[in-house]
Amino acid sequence: MNIVKKSLAVATLATLFTSSIVFAKDVTVQAESTKFVPLVVNIEPGDTVDWTNMEIHNVNFMFQPDGAEDFKSEIGQNISRVFTKEGIYIYQCDPHIGLGMGGAVIVGEPSNLDALKAAKLQGGLGMVAKRAIKSVEKKK
Ligand SMILES: [Cu+2]
Image (cartoon, rainbow, N blue to C red; front, side, top):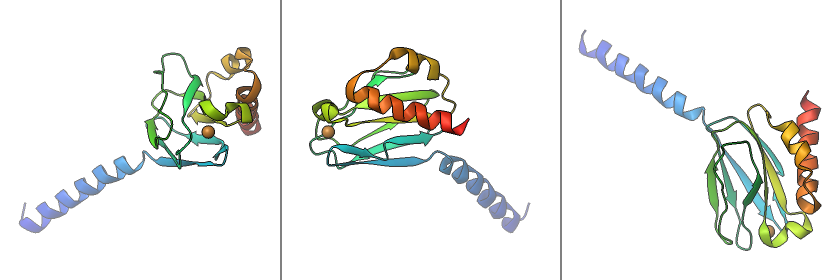
């Protein structure tokens, strides 16, 4: 292989490598007043959600697919979570769930939809769950 061919091969490999990394995406959720925007996020396994503007907020996951690790952040922290397990995740902001401040992350196939319905979440969390269920059923 001459030097030009060799560097072309290296460049091609580098492109392949870079583009496979780009497939994993980052989605930002903004805390605005006592709401998370967007409230429902759809991502694929391996993607990341970044919560920003979290000065007086946190995220605490109250419902997740079986086997997903517990996840709770400190109040006042901008935080990221990588989602590897498929399914629906429901979280709340501890200080503001009474005002309905929570959100949902749907990773790949919402395989635990029946479990979410059976969980019969109440109050602010119940409102968030309802929004998540609605967004899943709209897609069917
Ligand atoms: Cu909050």
